[in-house]
Image (cartoon, rainbow, N blue to C red; front, side):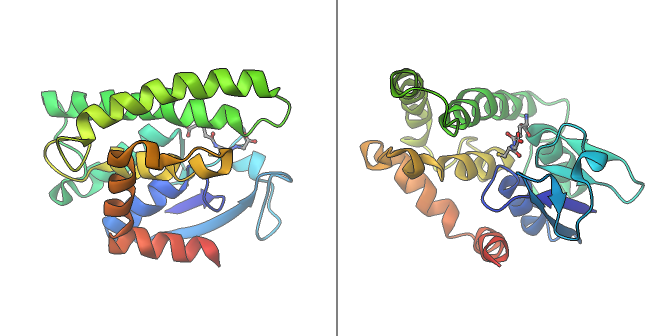
Length: 200
Ligand SMILES: N[C@@H](CCC(=O)N[C@@H](CS)C(=O)NCC(=O)O)C(=O)O
């Protein structure tokens, strides 16, 4: 498999999961401005959507969209328990979190990268985002991870997008449960390895 990534982008989540699962993969860096890979290949020919993450399977299929990639990976090694079994209620609970992280947290923080948005618009986005942070805290104040069963792909995703908060002068210390969550996930060897690999 090949994971197309940009350093510290949302592709960090599947990168962490590949390492958590100890799956063989090649990491291919994409320049999101030029849409070229490190070797100069046209990324748009690989993923016409033009964004990371993209996972190219050994049969040539290209899978995109974080929640789909994460579940595909977790199901390759179900014994690692990074996702509850398919067709269980817990799996739907996981999908509920993946969708929440994708639309409410990734989506919200993602808009803040847009340099064209005036400050008043960014303030409104933050106001909504902070309500969503409160929702996360309701769960993370009573358990270590989003699912009661332990670390899952949803946590890898949440960790990845919450890392962007300081870029927008959002001080996570206002939500201690989120700071503790970030520290807890940051301690995982697979997370440390993924972050180190993306710094290269
Ligand atoms: N819907 C996609 C969004 C992916 C996305 O937002 N990727 C960003 C990095 S976090 C990107 O590559 N943006 C570059 C661009 O849109 O040109 C997903 O959930 O995977």
